[in-house]
Image 1 (cartoon, rainbow, N blue to C red):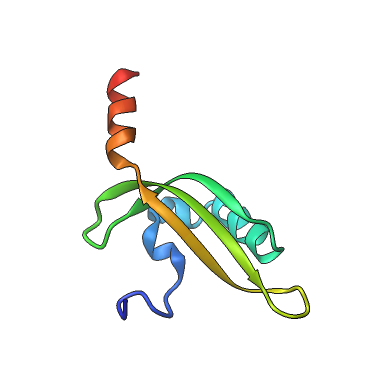
Image 2: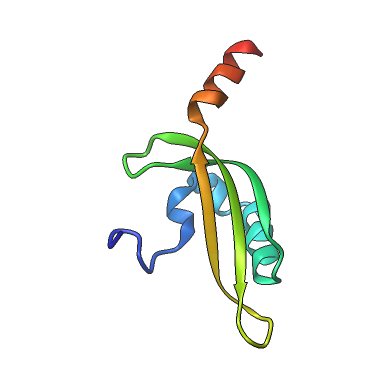
Length: 87
């Protein structure tokens, strides 16, 4: 936990994705209080790609402004690999 505490979420995405308009929009939506759900590719500590089914929820302060984000995620890499083999 100390390895990621205080660091930006972009450490979990591919470099080309971290600078993309879609990734900036993802965080803009969260900053405006909109939750995001879906399937997302992420990167492990060792650099291996994984897929998650994730839900990101902005947590609002007393004035209604988001001040942090909570994420719930399930590793669905094996499911994505099966789907890819069927395509």
